[in-house]
Image (cartoon, rainbow, N blue to C red; front, side, top):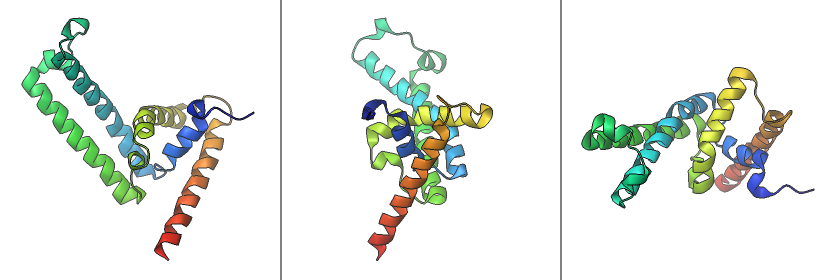
Length: 155
């Protein structure tokens, strides 16, 4: 039976993993994905406030730091972390980030991919037996296909 694409974890993790095979780049992502996610949520929260829905939400960073300083922290974190991500890809991965090929998939998968990588490295966790091996095989196949297409373009 064919898997439904939207719920095919192996396919999604293999796509993202093919862009994150270098251990240094993976480490950079493990450090920087979380601040990007958090500060993105702060930005979304601020937009909700600007639209007048503040009664539905409770402020966290803005209350602690004040609105002006909170925005400076958010913007600095975004710039620093995105720069780190792109440098990780350029210097260590030697490949453009996944978001250039599939923006939505990259943004949705990044936190899950990093979390699963950390759980797998620390505890050997897998969503189900054989998941890691099957994803690794697909990642290796994707990287091989990418390298072959890159070589063809260079000829």
